[in-house]
Length: 316
Image (tube, rainbow, N blue to C red; front, side, top):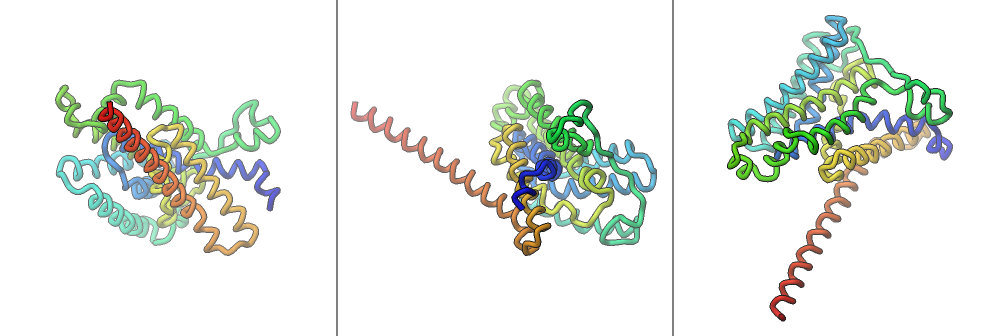
């Protein structure tokens, strides 16, 4: 078992299983920076995964399928924004309603087009292939870890750079952050908070769609009912642990991906399936608890410092 953990294949698996988490974390980060906690990332991933598979199956056109999957993601993001921002509905209730609707809708649509409620295996869909990196692929061990991943995986890591540049080096990113921090102040200088939040949610849907299509058109070439398995919510947790920093969110995603890879190794070595399947979610909960405790400790330290300074001022 130890050799399994120290193998190039294990580290390759970490990167592979972290891919949808990185996309979900970037989706959550952009939305949260805009002042909206997007809890529909998982359902958006699911809808885009199904859309990409069905379009590719019936058109046999991969670029068109990816485009349609991305459009579905953007539409899902704006759809949530319309109800929450424009219609002023409760954010949590809106998210729960969309998530509940999507889980049933994907089964209904899948059955309508394939005649199967469990998977799309009855139709032949297309998939994005694996990419070898020149030069690196020939380096022992390193090439086995980094090269040969699915195209979506490399896009995931590029999305981290894109998100950082968007948020901290572009006027649009500045507007998104300004609206998220204080929408009233942003409005007072001529910005339209509703418009900016919708744009942030559109970006969130875009990255969610990439994560969903990776699962049905990259890691696998078939759609399976509820195949996201809560990865969208784990991405939200990774964003929170990364403190709104794209690099931090990526590292948190890799941490959760490591938990998944460990679960895979344990499952191969005949550990109880129920215990193994719970590992990624237990790690997610533990990560959130540790993060929350750390943030609370920082908050308490600031309060104590402020009280101490006030007492010194009164004494003076």
